[in-house]
Image (cartoon, rainbow, N blue to C red; front, side):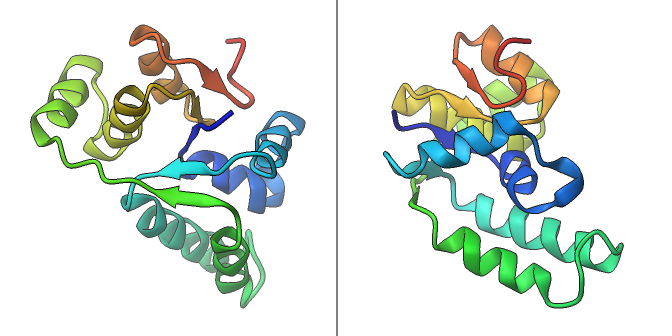
Length: 138
């Protein structure tokens, strides 16, 4: 099954203190199908890993290693260029523009959303988008 991947689930794959069996199962599913990401995913994950390295959650050099490993996964970048739709979702569901982009992609492609972000998962459910990962049954 193809699904949208957000930065929070990627964090759970690479940051030891955020790993879970449910997030690992989502990563394993990437072996069968490519995941979809908006272009901002790469900016968010770079910043996430850099911040984790600076705060000692990753060792020196692991931010780059994590990005290299992440880029090796079957993740397909898809455009999210419907500004009015993204802004409307963000306003309606009280999301950041970043999070609304992931949800907009899931809605536009009619795909589930893999996330560990509780607010984004709640917004996805409200929009009738299936949620994958640790929050799947919440």
